[in-house]
Image 1 (tube, helix red, strand yellow):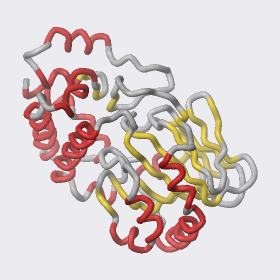
Image 2 (cartoon, one colour; image 1 turned 180 degrees about the horizontal axis):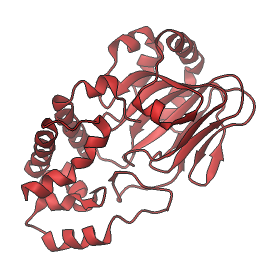
Image 3 (cartoon, one colour; image 1 turned 30 degrees about the vertical axis):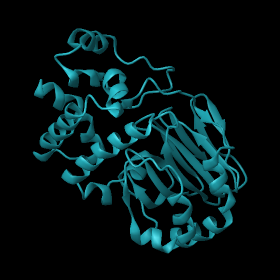
Amino acid sequence: CDVAMASLLRSRRHETGSTSPGLYSCDMAMASLLRARRHEPGAQRLLAQAFIGRWPLSFLAAPRGLGSSVARLLRGPRYPSEFVRPKFWLPFLTSRPVWPSNDPVSRALVEHWEEIREEFRAAIAEQASADVNTRSLTIRGAWRKVPLYSQGLAHEANLARCPRTAAVLAELPLCRALGMAYFSEIAGGSDVKAHFGPTNARVRYHLGLDVPDGNVYLAIGDGAYRWAEGQTLAFDDSYIHAVKHEGDAPRGVLIVDVYHPELTMEERQLLEDLEAVHRGFFPAAYEKALPH
C-alpha cells in the first residue's frame, strides 16, 4: 500500500525537476497526510474521484474500495474533451475552456488596471527574467516574468515594489496550491507552444496591460482569443493553450490563478496543506523553478 501511495504522487517530480532521495520521502509524507485526513470533509471528493495521471487517489483509502479503485485505474480518467489533459484532475468540477469575465475577480482587477500597468512596466524593466518553463515553452522569441506568488509562496520583494497590485491580489481567492500570480511579457515575433496546465482546480485570469495591434492571440482548446487593455480573459488552463504574437511591440498581462469556485473551503485548505508539505522538502524549487 505504501508503494502505491508513493506512485500516486510521483508526477510532482516533473514540477521540481528533482530526482533526489528526498522525493520519495516527500511523496510518502503527502500520501500519509491524505490518508490521515481521509475522513475529513475536505478529503471526501478528492479521494473518491480525483486522479493524478492515470492513478485514482482512491487507492489512498485502501483496502476500502480497492476493487473500484482498480476498475477506475483500468478505465482511466474521463476527460470532457480531447483538449483537456491535466496531471491532477478533479472530475467533479465544472469544466469549460473560457469563463465569464464579469465576476468579482475580474471587477477587482479591472478597477485598478491602469495603476497595475504602471507597476507592471516598472517591474518588467527592472526585474523580469526567464525561467525553466518560459525557456522550454517558447518556440521562438522571448517570454519573461516577474513572479508575485508561486504556489503559496509570496515573492515579498516584488510585491513591495508593486503596492497596488499587491493590495488587489490580497483581496482575491488566490490559488495557493498549484497556482501562480505573475507579470508576463511576451516579445513581438514570439510563439509559445501548446501545453496543458497542471490542474483544473484553478481558473486563470489574464488582465490585459499592454496589448499591441496585429495578430496577437491566445489559443485555448479549439478557439482563439485576443487580449484587450483593461479587460480580463478568464480560462481553464488545463485545456491545451498556446500564444501567437506576430506583432512588433511586447504583449504584457498580469496572470492570476484563483481557486475553481466549486472547491469548498475545506478542499482548498487540504490542497494548501499538501503544498506546504511539498514546499518543506523542496523550498529552493519555489524560488527558481516556477511551475506554469
